[in-house]
Length: 186
Image (cartoon, rainbow, N blue to C red):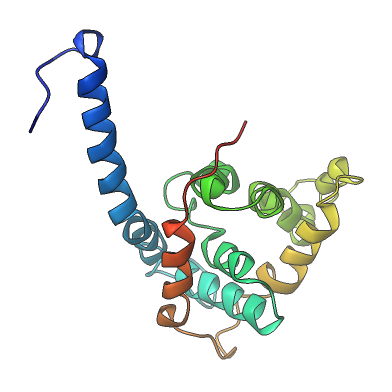
């Protein structure tokens, strides 16, 4: 079979869906790391008032995580934590977490999903928000890890003078992460 016979999904057969599934999975697996890196690279450009752009912020976050001795998955998460910015600015944490979820552990998923509200500790009080919004998660097993992620690698990664590693230093780790078999999750 080189293509399916149906034009409406309701008319497909098991064989056709198995065929499509194999092609789709092979294509996605072959292009996933490039697509995610493309989201990261799309953040290059205007600094939008910051001293560095969002791309450099992401590289700097990952550089700091690596320098602190974080494991490879966590370093990649630091690199990709804001990839949702350009496609879901109002819920960028959830967007990034959803994209990374099948390839990362539960702890890193929780951190990425919640880092936006935890990051708010540093500025919400200046913008009319509740800087202590993260307190609703106090007692969660990953609360302290998320607070540390934001304190050590996120809120302080807007420094144009910080010696930041280039993307090439992280790209092999990104490719290894997305070469993993996707995990099932609830």
